[in-house]
Length: 170
Image (cartoon, rainbow, N blue to C red; front, side, top):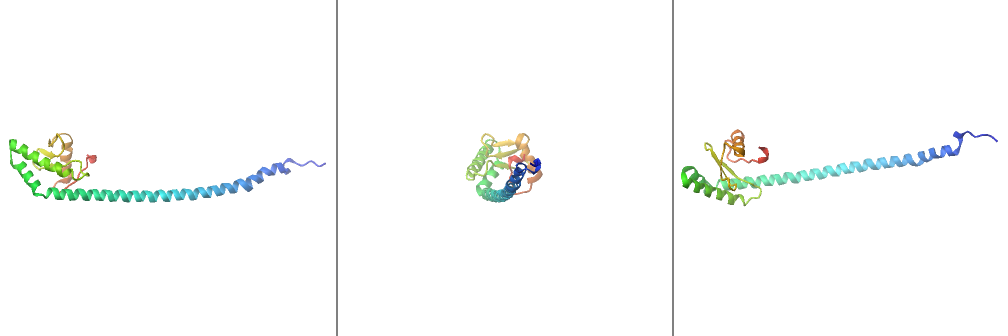
């Protein structure tokens, strides 16, 4: 009987045939599916992200429009002008009462718009700014956050009729 070398044996070729016939095509199919799935995930996530950005942009635009409308309405009202002129022209106890009326007016108007957290009125040449913040109705422009807001106003907001400010920029 002839001796068959081991590399001619079927037991040697069988695993190789199984790998070639089954595993390699399976790997190729899985790789193809993976690439299609990956592309779908990228497309879906980018479209979702774009949609979220559009919604955020519209929300920001609506918020700014609401604030602009609120500011135009409040600043152009006769009541605001009257309270501000009273505050600027009076002294002593009458000035405190005028400031209280002004801050009450600002507070009542601010509550109508949920987008506004607080209002600051800066009068050029004055050492104080008026706010609607509880217990801080009149703040010196030479200390703390009021100084930062006032400096920002002097650098970037001066000579503007209306300006908007976020405390996150301080």
